[in-house]
Image: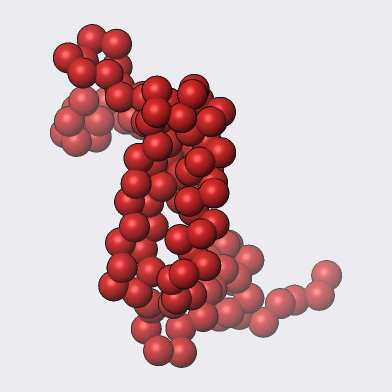
Length: 114
């Protein structure tokens, strides 16, 4: 469904569900059965400074899904300990601000007691 069809119909497109086997910085990769080549495994991926770390742990190479998951977690711990800490890349002095309804009302008007 393209943007125009979505806009005219008024329905929202379905949100893609996260894979329940994935974790922070570890993605589960499973190609569709109709693909020419099958890939099954866990991919570790993260950025630290100017370093990009990406590695795939295949199920067949690590004795199954759980073996690949354990190897990916072990690699992630080792790689993150060797790289610098994550740095916030926002504007100087920026703080994370709540954008809820209450935050915007309280900002501009004084509250009345009832």
